[in-house]
Image (cartoon, rainbow, N blue to C red):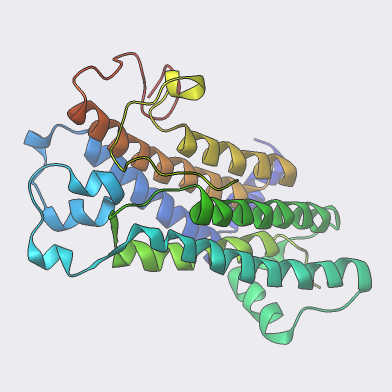
Length: 273
């Protein structure tokens, strides 16, 4: 085992513990979706909580109690508004710190120390964090543009818990990037809102290439940080399982809706899963 491995694994700070817990939760949820339904007791509330958009309409009609917690899926744009503003704010302070020597605000410095940023050393991580935060901000800006000018949300819904989680996620992901710093489209015409089987490019291999692309984006950020950065690889692991879950639910939806759905097409990973 490399010398850094023991140090990294022994330093389970609050931030790493949180990402590890989220990873475990989504891994367990993914496994439960792969187990035959006859072996797992059904829970309508649990299924309603993990599904959103088109997959929430799968199966029997949802109860009125479940519908109380619905919010429009178009509220996805709120996630990226928060991300652009909050991570832009963090990027501004990091830029000032790196290039002008301006210290972080006292409250932000204290928050990062609580999350575990104090354990990191090495000035090379500061530049890596700057690049990753730039990528994250640009990624959020692109997703916000897609929400406004590309995506068609129709009347799809998400659970209010999913909505709150999404808001917190984009605040947390920016803090995770910053914690690595050492301390001491076009307009389109909507024709219809019906689902069709997509073909071409990555759709020939997986049902949801957007989820696969999301994973690749976070892996590219991990490469920027370096292969030995355990904290960000925990983020990548969480993204892997959360996107795999969404991809699996979408894959099941398409297979149930279209009899002629391509049998060779996988849910998330080409030729594998």
